[in-house]
Image 1: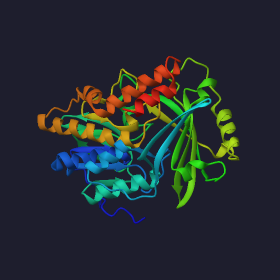
Image 2: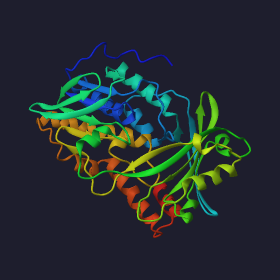
Image 3: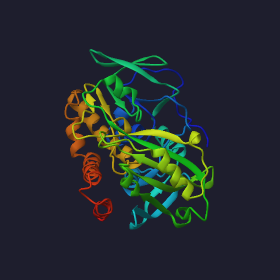
Image 4: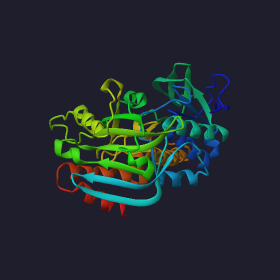
Length: 372
């Protein structure tokens, strides 16, 4: 890939808005600002603590909802991907097969995030790479942000810095997200044991619910370094945290052996997945959260589509704040609840509670959800 060629040539602190984090949620926020209020987009800086291309642990799933958001933004992202026509969900000996052509794409975040950031910089995004958020303090005009490169006076901060958001930690909100645990590996496709790649299929097995896992095992086909790979993983949402912890490593090891995969645990990758409970706090004066920094849902674990949708929510809230000269964001939680991203997260969170208490069948719940 060629490098992003439109970044700042030196530290410029003359901005009204700072977006912290250059993943899909942060870049989507800027792209929606650029669509709704170009004059505000011009006064926005996005800081990314790393340098593109940088990898992120993620299943890389983009639902058709996310693809629709990109189309509305007039964006075509051309990166290696696997187009999914079928999703298989299993519980014990039962399966539900959901078939819709191209309803899901599997990408690698390393390539997708880079391509999305390049599209935004081509449209005018001021991007500061290798710049990390350190802290903030209130000022008469808004917020003073301290980074490893200097200080900025801004009106609005958008925390888009992922699951372990430093922005969120510094905000000291009344509520914090709950965290699911996820483990994943990438392994070359074994044609005998990994039919998903050839069949353009994703596979999610909820059978581990019987062993106390509040989650599932997944097998997703993908492209890595131009070659066919599989992303294998397991997650546990821990919705009911008082229940005994399950040995995820043991269950995942058994799953890998069933596919003749000898991948030592010391080479596995683990990461938290933040999800939202009903009582949420996603803002304070001059500050809002998006994407994983805000939280996703605990049933499937969200995806890139949620981050892209958060961008629309945030951009609308920011536009209204500047139009009304009111940067309290007191209504941001309500906006979230009434936006498609909030409704989707709340719906799947409710289903997750029903499923993991045994009040509902996971396959029946998914069948009803996906048929709508």
